[in-house]
Length: 147
Image (cartoon, rainbow, N blue to C red; front, top):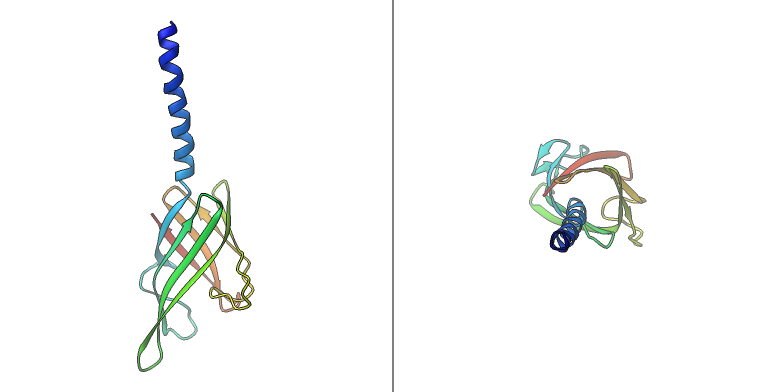
């Protein structure tokens, strides 16, 4: 019996630590942007002019509670394409399957939209859906990120 207990305790400890790591791993990590409003990339980024296209993006949920959101755009000015890279960061929290990203940028002009303080969405083990306001909150888009 002692032999069984001596083997069972380390085995159970390993299972418990694996369950914790799996739960944490199911949320933290890097997600690549796959679509905007159900359109695969490159996708139109804004309905007003149709001259800006979202080429790529990523969302990284760090284990320390911070996130990094970035995207790469291309804008046609009538003569040439101009590339634009946007990056933003802040804190993230999960409540069940609800994800909230809170922007902690101190700049007056936020590259993801003026006066945006939070993004709301849902999270699963392999995907994040995020509502991203544009044009000072007048327009919103649904971004889908996947691992």
